[in-house]
Image (cartoon, rainbow, N blue to C red; front, side, top):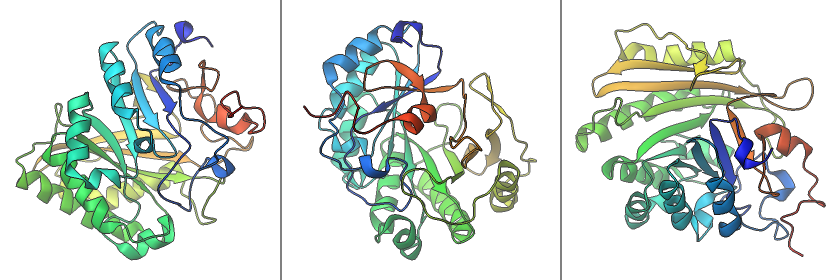
Length: 305
């Protein structure tokens, strides 16, 4: 659809196909670090976003969005046009405190930080092909220190469930260190998800949504007096593969999210989501996973000529 006809709440921006990691799970597959695929065009991006009929969450994704040298400018554009910017990042560049300060100055208040190994380098070696615990922990601290809300993302399988509780407790300690109270104005979130066989993937056990809810309760339920009850309405949209929670902790109300992105019978995870779209290489809006499921890398309009 044309941007002026957009109906999605969240629009992802394929900021770049470049990445400074080589994770075992990456839906981009052969498009990752493929020099034929160009970064988003800033002028065309601004033109498209300026036509949106209502306020949206604009989510910068990659590969790794911090690899795009125009990221700060695009965040400023989103703010200027009255939308809410966020980004999904592996966090390597965020280990540099100045980079986080510059993100904040550009207008970024929230981001998703991938921490599949938590505090454990051995898990990162399996999931992300390297020892990244130190830089990821530093990135998380820099975000909390400089008031960028972290949504902490962990892809789970049976081999890394043990990292969830230590990561949660470390986050509580960082909140205490910098006097950050989680809640409405600083809504820290823990998100666990299963991903399917799309692009590059670990061929391992995946969890359905009911199993993810049980995992969430077992890992985080002991730290709250509340019963953790899933809500399948997200941003006003009814979901079947995603649910959210909120629960009180010693540093305020925290939020949780479970997402089942395993592959459906038609080969697409979370088909027909009404909440999440993507700005395509034609600078139009399409459903997120349907777009990636259908893309032909030899025909993409963003291919270098």
